[in-house]
Amino acid sequence: MWRRLSAIARKEFRQIRRDRRTLALLLFFPAFMLILFGYALNFDFKHQTLAVCDEDQTADSRAFARAFTHTEYFDLTRTLANRRQVDHLMGRDLIRVAVIIPRNFSNALAGGRVADVQILIDGANASTAGTALGYVQAIVQDYSAGIRISALERRGIQIPAPPLDLRPRVWYNPELKSAQFLLPGLIGFILSITAVISIALSIVRERERGTMEQLVISPVSPVELILGKTLPYVLISLAATAGILLAGALLFGIVIKGSLFCLFIIVLSFLTACLGLGMLISTLADTQQVAFQISILATMLPTFLLSGIVFPIRNMPGVIRAITYAVPARYFLVALRGVILKGTGWSAYGLQILALLVFAILTMGASVLRMRRRQY
Image 1 (cartoon, rainbow, N blue to C red):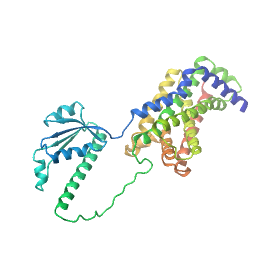
Image 2 (image 1 turned 60 degrees about the vertical axis):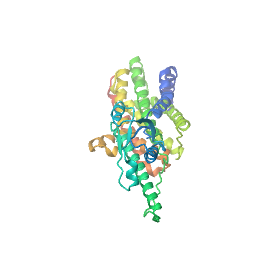
Image 3 (image 1 turned 135 degrees about the vertical axis):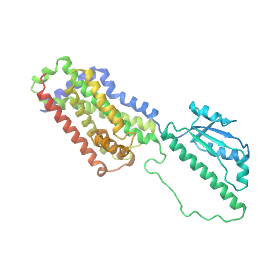
Image 4 (image 1 turned 180 degrees about the horizontal axis):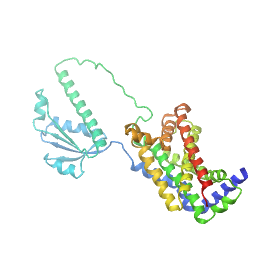
């Protein structure tokens, strides 16, 4: 058995070496996609365009406007002379936030009255608008608290200590960088596409070239054929994974906090599940074009939309959440983020590894049955 298995694996390695497109797809394309998506997908809320219309033109109004530009969240790009300019600029996506300070702003503060301020936020992007609203409210509250404290100090009133001392700490991603959250998901997204497509095309290529008949009538069993053709892609995909992790560490500062052995087992389980799916697709398609299309439909959209890479699964409707259990990347991302970001042990993702292995067994078993029944 091992002799026949190694013969199939050596044959597949030779075909991969001769087919430079497949070799580039497996080795260099994943790292390229990681760099592309890693820089393109960025949900960090920074440097949002800001416009200020200061109708009061006093020291207090200018101090209030400066409160927005002392952080990296807003960049003052426009100083408006008339509030009617806001609609023109925001409608053309030239600004995201507009601060309008009306006349008598300073007089209201000096007289101890409530000073009105209008802040307009572009709500076309609901996620960005919600984040902007939170930062705006925090800036306004801090500025209001500063004015209140200054007024009490001028009257000689001792300021009592706040009843609560809030000291929040963010674990695992203290700087709240979106790359720390997205890159593990991108690894699963890229590996699922490349692994499934490569193995699906390899089987169909044998059928198109007429060499599948020779393999079927040979002493090689369907199980040996599948394992022999899968093994080279597993090894090459593991090498590609190492390249992806190296690129993530050098370019995005991703540090693996957990065990490298645990990471190896998780990646190997996921690749086995992906290659099993690729094998199953190869038994359904007659041409490489059809196999490629089915592979894209079975991997790209489900992995990106239903695995939790970007959109939280808990926020999805019940029917959609049930469908996500059939997506291998769902389990892979939980385990991968646990190892890379949290450094957790086996107990945190044992069920995820088991689910990936079950998926691999089911898909490979279905592939063996279809290969036995199909007439080549």
